[in-house]
Image 1 (spheres, rainbow, N blue to C red):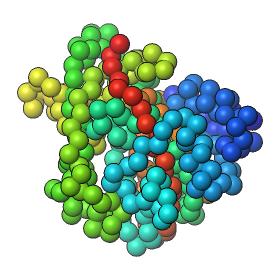
Image 2: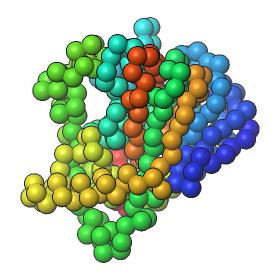
Image 3: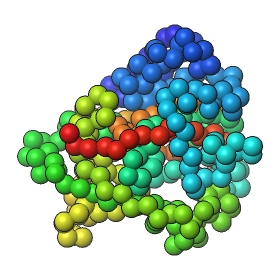
Image 4: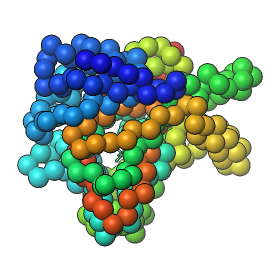
Length: 275
Ligand code: SIN
């Protein structure tokens, strides 16, 4: 297989691989550990192949809120119909950061793509951390942030088109409020990275609302710099896997009038810490 970095920030494209082949798994996992985002091109796979590949990384984490694929409760449907306006995942976020043990990674399979657009952007939270000044890093170390599912998937968020159209459900189960260090050490590599995101992080503990909003907004603007990003331009059949402990992502909603359908499988993670 040919592994080509996407940018200097993160991400790699893998050509000539087959995720169904167990003998290729070691190389694919090594690329994932190194690049945090991998795009495995041109996979002719079934939902069962998708699940089997995910299980090689660990147990499946079943998403509580996304409508599942018919007959596959472990596969979440990420769908925008041609007459819908809102895409799921449009804001910069880290999947499941509202869980006390955030999911390790997500594996998205492109089933039906629009003729143009519908790309996904990723940010390296390690690169964003590395670019901070030493005094600011010192200030952030030891701080804890709260992440919640309530304002995104809960009963107060039911006027969104995604909820109204049935793409999201189980609002009554959106009761997660997790505490995580603002700076974490990656559980596998030990690399330091920021662990706050615009969609799910509500505030930093111990700061006033004004202080917390100012610090979070400053960090969010800092992280959005193009130098820390890569962009995945999908083709139907591609599989992209990302590391939730090391990245943010954002679905670009620029294909109005066309359908886009992805299948997403998420893999369990572990508690994260600053050590
Ligand atoms: C997601 O946020 O999991 C979906 C990303 C995408 O649809 O590109």
